[in-house]
Length: 114
Image (cartoon, rainbow, N blue to C red; front, top):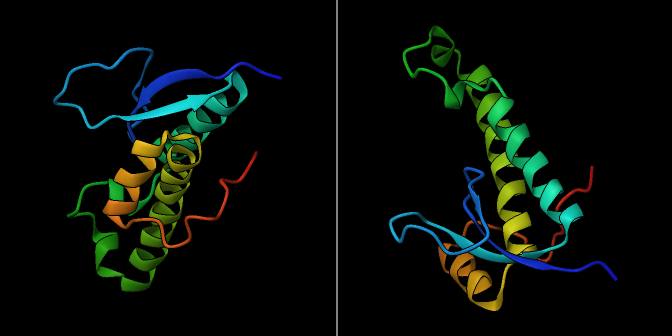
């Protein structure tokens, strides 16, 4: 069985072996190396996307509502994937914190393995 290590992570992709600056919003997880890599892939996918939601608001594409809705859905889906990883790998305290945030509509869903 693969060994799980404790990490403190943020949805932005920050990963620490020990709890860091209290000003950062970090979640405690227990993950194998493979699981941690999958979390990194989900964060990279989010960060590398060129969705309008992450770009300059004054971009003219914002005036095309259909395009904005498509980009908004892509952004939301990728962000949910990150939170699913954090929830799935999280400690009981982390799971309670994410449940309080009420951001995962289907907490029983597992993150998508790539």
